[in-house]
Length: 215
Image 1 (cartoon, helix red, strand yellow):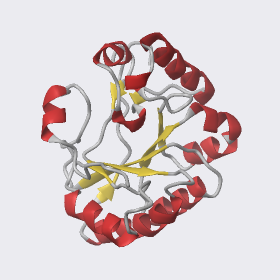
Image 2: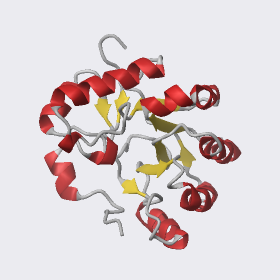
Image 3: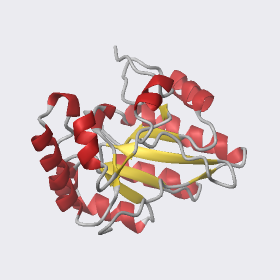
Image 4: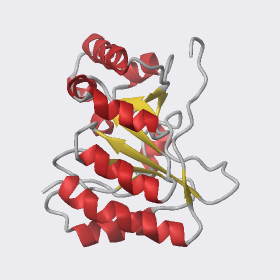
């Protein structure tokens, strides 16, 4: 059974205030949907279909090796008007990885993406302070306000949906996964979550790209 917090911890936000947890400058109630671990055929395509129904924009934090294997899926994401971010090439846990290897893996992912992005999300949300200091020279480190838990096979889809709705607020950065592991739950939760908030006047936007030298 997985253990995780649906709502990002206040202490973590305090320890890492320079990371992006929420975006609260929108004039209207807005949710920032993000999808980690793709792109994957069928799974990412399902996500794109659901987003299109609500004219929703999102940000896809891509694993470089999945981009290498499914480049056509990356093109579909971009053609649909969504943003992409870097999620390392091999989904590395920063806490368990040497700094030099971690940074090299990020660069490898960037080369595979073949487009400029200044958005980075550490897999598992785990990154050392020393790694973050280097990464933030070129990227915004995008964490989350709400973790849906769609990857947890022990979490009933109805509970996943209820918790996601409960904790999502205007400005929330919400994490789903366009992965095979998450697909059974995600395909239940995502369309219902979109419908719920759309009916209440929310819009769905991509995480904005920060401006860095060279971007």
